Length: 561
Image 1 (tube, one colour):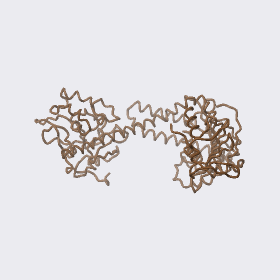
Image 2 (cartoon, helix red, strand yellow):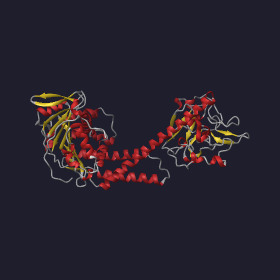
Image 3 (cartoon, one colour):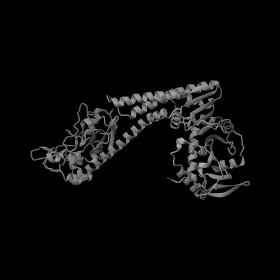
Image 4 (tube, helix red, strand yellow):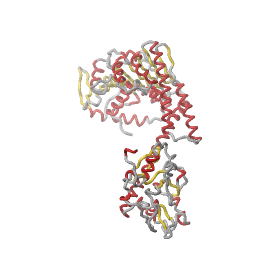
């Protein structure tokens, strides 16, 4: 586990506070809030007062959490608390599991740089500082108070104001925390009225940053009509509050306090429209990243499941209004939350898996392309489509003769090169198909490959000119249309897959050149060009341009594509 240090702690708090103070105003507000709530389902307990001393007047956003309470939570009993405890004690000297309350806050951002931030840690018992983080500071004083000034402006300074209270922050903020411990502010007034029964509470006072947020929104690109109401939110809101809990006993939720009841009605309407729009966008993206359902009942069922879950989520996140307050509540039912997470994660996992497969497919084609060029360096020609005997009978595919250039010499030497691919001996080698010839998305039987040479009149793979166990085909000078503009090998679909040793390849249907290519990957097929580059070719490509890509002497220019 990477040791926790002062710099990483400070940067983490700064990132979180800046995100909290800005994310709510973005055009993806609804999606972000929905995701936040679903990822932290939430403890019935009496409200407790919170000590707000040392929270400075400039602070506009705050996050309050209770590490000591969280460490005792049954929902987090599998966390590696022992490791966290030892690591922090070694680096900083104090026991993180004795932090009764942690308050992190941030000032409004300025034109000069990121906002100042600070943290107040209150411990259940006396603590002593120590460890390596003191080496990043130097002794300093303000008035009669001693503190540790950061050696670098971007690092946080620290002050142990008493044996149970530790202040951390950027130096300007830390000095405010020390000098004006009881400064009043809109944020402190909000926090003083907020019950601290939740595991995590986040609060934003909108008034101090209203003008800044409006300036930010004015510079944004035009929003789609369902999200135009977001532009009015800064003028309608007074406070944003988020409550997160980790048990089933208490819900999580968001409370938006408006300037008046009329503003609350508009906020409610904006959120409802935003949720509907977010649902449609999310479903559209998921469907786009999924394989085409076609006649596949499993994919069709997945799409129906995603629609049902999206409708359920939209219904459960639907806001309610009470006077000038708008509430979004999420039940802490683990079963439901688990289903929601599955609904969100399945398409993401599926998309990530497809991306990994596509990358692996590109790697396979790249290796084949480099092997082709090494073959050319050795024989002054690319391999022909197959080898043949003295009677002109095809024997073995070019894929077999490329093996020595794919670090597969041992396998190559097992073939009887003077026998056809389906001879009793050579057939036994089909199951030993090298991984480089196996398309990662393919469901074709073992021994079949989706990597086929482009073969036909005027195309890359030609019949050998003579009987030879090392069949030679075209050379560089034959590609008058340019190697980079000529497709040599395609990643075909499973219906086109052939035994990898068999002297059969892709022969394009000139009337329907995409036939046999689509289906392995959503919306595209991958192709190896003569210069060993790999490109994804869209299903929407002009058929005439695709045919010209297959031709060694009539390749399209970039302007044609």
